[in-house]
Image (cartoon, rainbow, N blue to C red):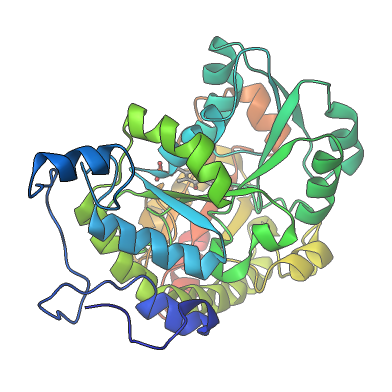
Length: 398
Ligand SMILES: *Cc1c(COP(=O)(O)O)cnc(C)c1O
C-alpha cells in the first residue's frame, strides 16, 4: 500500500511532511511505520538476484545497502530538508566522517571553522591528516579569514552554525559564495539549528549532516545520523563509500527516529521558547558573568542569527564567576537539571565542556574557541521553564 494516492509529498506543509513523509505501508496497512528488523532479503530466483545486483531491477539486497525502515527515515528527512537525497548513518560522527572522507583524497585541503564539536575537530585535525588531507582552521565569523584560507587544492569547507558550545553563528550564504568561487563544496553540521530552524541548502550549502541522536530522537534513546545532498553526490560519491565501509543506520534506530521526527517541530519550538526565557533570566542572575544565546541582543552575531535562523535554538551557554570550582558547585546544586553531555533531549541537560566534550582538544584549542573553565552549556528540555529557572538560580546561590 502506497502513500495516499493523489497527494504530492513535496507540496505538503512542513508539519505534514514530519508526520507522513516517506510512509511506505506494507500490504497489512499498519498505521505506524513498520519496523523491518532484518539484515538479508530473498529473491524468487537467480535471475532476479543477478538483476538486483546489477542495478537493473529495483529492490533491496542487504541491510548494509538499504532497509525499508531506514528508507522511510531517509525519505522523511529528505522531504523536511528539501534535499534531493538523504543517506541515514549509524551516528552523527559517521555522517560527518562519511560526508568528508567520501570526497577527499591525499593531497586535498579542507578549511573548517575553529569552533567545532570535539569529535569533528579530531576528524579535521587528526584523522584526515593521516590520509594526506591537510587543513586550515579559521575564525568562522571572520569572512576575510575564509577568503584568505583557500588554496588551489581546497576541496571543501566544513562548519557548524551555531557551534558547540560557543553558539557562534556563521554567515552560511557568504561562506558558500566564497567557497563556490573557489570550486569548493560546503558541508554544514546543522545539529544545533535542527532542520526546523535553519535550512543550509537554501542558503547555498552543498551537503548537510546531522547527528539524529540529538533533537531528531530528542528523547535520549538511540544513536543515528544523516547526510543530505544532491542526488548526484549521493550516487557518485557517498553511496560507494558508505556501502563498502558500513556505518549503516540500524532499522530499529531508524524506526525510533521516524517517531522522533513526528514531534520534532513541536518539541524544538517549545524548547526554543523556554531557552530564550531561561537565557534572559540567567542574564539577570548574580554570579553569571555572561550568557550566549543567538536571539538575545547581547549575542555577537545576533542580527545574522535572526536572519538565518527561525529562532535562537535549544541551547544556552553561560559563564559563571569563579571558574571550574564554582561551575562544579553549581552542577552539584542542581536538583532537576541533569549533568549530561547529550543535548536536544526532552530532559534539560547541562555540561561543563572544558572537562567533557572538549577535554581532548587541549587547552590551546579550547582558548581559541572561547571555552573557559567557568563555561556551562545548557540543553533546554520540555519541562516547565519556571522550574528550570528556579533550579538554576538556587544552584547558583548555594
Ligand atoms: C553530537 C554531535 C555530533 C556527533 O553525533 P553522534 O550522534 O554523537 O555521533 C556531531 N556534531 C555535533 C554538532 C554534535 O552536537
